[in-house]
Structures are given as C-alpha cells and as structure tokens.
Length: 212
Image 1 (cartoon, rainbow, N blue to C red):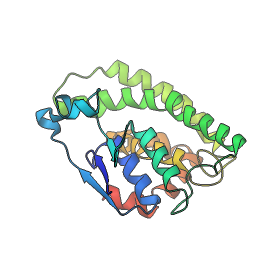
Image 2 (cartoon, rainbow, N blue to C red):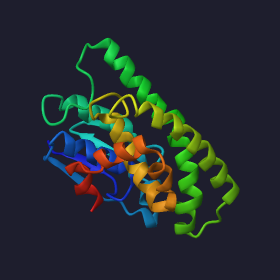
Image 3 (cartoon, rainbow, N blue to C red):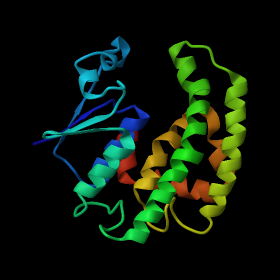
C-alpha cells in the first residue's frame, strides 16, 4: 500500500517527514493536502485520526502515526536498507543512546526557543495576530547563547549527532530555514561552525527539492 502523508509542503513539521522520505529514496507515497484556512484539521474526520488536529499524519496500511519526529524515525527504521542511513543500526545500544541524547538536545534546547521567536516574528504577523517583541527578543537572546554551544560542538564533529548526516540534522533543517526567512540568519552567519554545517545540509539534493 502507498504511504499516505497528510500535510502541507510549506509546513515546518511536514518538511521533516518529506526530507526523510527523500533521503530514504521512498517514491511510493502520496502527500495529501489539508485546507488549513478553513480549519479542516480541527474537525472530524481528521480529528478522529489525529486528536490534536495538527500536521503531519502518516498512514501505512492499517498503521497510523503522528508527530513529525516520530514519523521520521519510523520511516528511517522501516526503510533502513535503502537510501541514506539516518539512524543507528538495530541493536547498537550505545549508538542509540547517543542518538536519543542528540534528539533530546534539539527538542529541549532549540525547538522551544525557535518556536517562540518564529511565533512573534513570522507566524503572528502573517496571521494578523499581535506579536510581543519582548518575548521574541528574550528567546532570541537565549537561543543565541545555546547556538554558541552548538558552534563549539560543531567544531568537534561535522553534523548534529556526529560525523555523519542523520535524522537529527533533519530535525533542525526546516526550523533553521524559517529562522533565516524571519530575518535571523545572522545567528548562523556569525558562528562559523554552524554556518559550515548549514552550508553542507542545505546543499543536499533532498533539501533543494523541498525548498524550491
């Protein structure tokens, strides 16, 4: 059965799953758009499948999974024998522990701050909602401090989870791109190791396909 991915190609979270599909060279999938403007995602039948009413949502025959990182991890394991190796080998306990470590770093030390910055600098203005510049500034300062740490880490390894491109890099890529769109590209330009990392990952064919 063809994989069915409900989402929007411009959505940050949908882009994580699309990048994973492209890196794993999965061609047999269908992207099913949803009408965000009419709130289709916030009412049945969509909320019967996804109780929180957000995207993306994946159906693989009778198996269903939501949350972009969970979907990406499922796809990386399901298609482990094709495309780019994005997760550790099955049974490699130490490598999986480090993978989960770096996944937690992204979710705890990057994502929450970026979400607030993007909300007040990009998404609220786009929606015509009020923005709080002090919240945006506070989170930008906190994000910059964390990016200093990332810059040191990337001085010791090539990618976010080590010396090989992985699913962890994919977790970051759409958000970094949106930060650049929101006028925050200097946060990466000013940090040479982060700049070099972004140069490498944004040059990948998978990223070029979804960002054009």
